[in-house]
Image 1: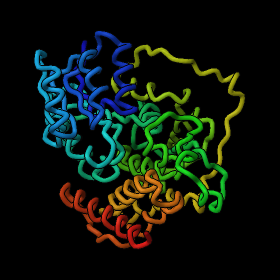
Image 2: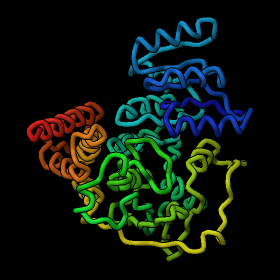
Image 3: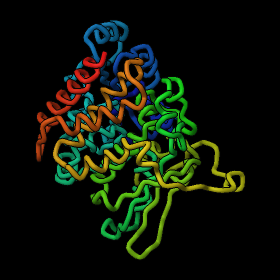
Length: 385
């Protein structure tokens, strides 16, 4: 049976890989809507190949350009948050939320309200609004299907096992490009160095997050809501080979792991095809050539951005929102060569202590907290400059 799908963030790393999976599975999916930021050239190519009924872009000028280019097509073009919400509410069987940042929260909620299952590739949705998203999904009977390789691994390990039997989540981390480095060495890191991930090919922002291990902190927060576990039952394990994508320890002491080569197409494929697996091309896992797997404790002193994530979870309320927003602002400054690499977690820590605490934030309060955290980071850096 053919599934309908909408992809929010179709020109990014996850979106383009999802469309390559859909193309390989010809006849299995009908693309209803696509959205992107500013890459209208690539979006145009996607329109010609997948024939969506609706597309949305970031600004009005690009929307006008696309509408003129595809004037003879049966295609509606929109822009901005209204366009993003409309793309999410097409009534697709599954909505892949692959936009970057907190902009993904409102369209995810809109898609859930419409009754679409969510293939979740937007960490911020669960990090900042998990307390809103999960109850809503349960009420609407909507599945949240994780696309992150680690959360997909945990989700796969849970199939056929009761959630109540979870003893511990073993969340693996590659360690990024600076595993084993001292804090003093990290102070000298340049943007080009931080963008060289040893295993994964990802977007610029998430690659920096991996280098600081803040990405793993965000995944800890996401796991807390996705799998309804307390922070003390989530353990981060540094696994440089990125072959075990995560593991579950169950109440009886059994540990189940999901393995595979570092290829984001695998968790994307699983989320889109769930509960089926189907076939997917790619290099098979050869344990003989790998030979050995290694595991280490994370260095929470040098990469204290990860420890801050546990602190934010324990604090609760809007503190995870501050953590995420301050990180986004700091990463943008680092990519713009305005701050040092080590300043990223420092700014997160400072923002967590300074932004006003809200116990149970709604969506508007979440978005206001984001603005406050970003403003704090900007002011803190401006004072130094």
